[in-house]
Length: 232
Image 1 (cartoon, helix red, strand yellow):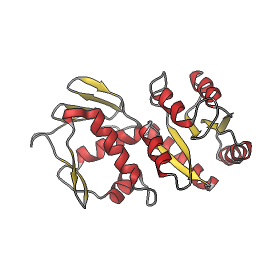
Image 2 (cartoon, one colour):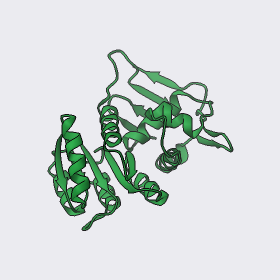
Image 3 (cartoon, one colour):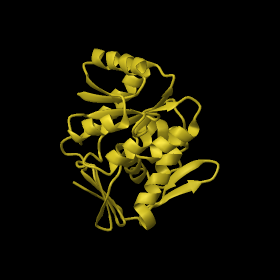
């Protein structure tokens, strides 16, 4: 696997590089946003780690450019400042799949990288359901594709996983903590991650969305009708 690490702090970049290389990854370094985009444009990376604060294009703008460019499905992890909740939220809203707050444990970052890559590469088992349908929403599990009333909708891997989980578990209220653990396998983390992904999914699904907020409890998927389809 080839991992892009974009951070203008050479000490941080070197520590991350060494940890990832221990895990058998090939690491490409970039010290600016412009350099990061140049590497991504070459199409030779499987995941990008972007620092929020970089010269010549901060991490947020780089993430947005990637999401609207030739690699919209590239897994992205943001490095954010400790305690800066707005940075974390902005990173997720720009399309990042995950974030790690500075100062961070290189071991934790390495675990997050493996987790994001594993989910990005997951494919349905032979004979498994390959498509979900609910009203005008159709989800192709094999191709990680979402269509609303026949129109393709681009989602990040985190958004896709959340949508699939909710459709498969209708009429059930889940707290944000439960969604963190059951959708993404995290037993720790900022619950605002869930809030941001729900917000993004609602915006992308438009009138077709049925993610209901149950105040004081969490979120619930309300199905279009009682005849939801699952096709093989």
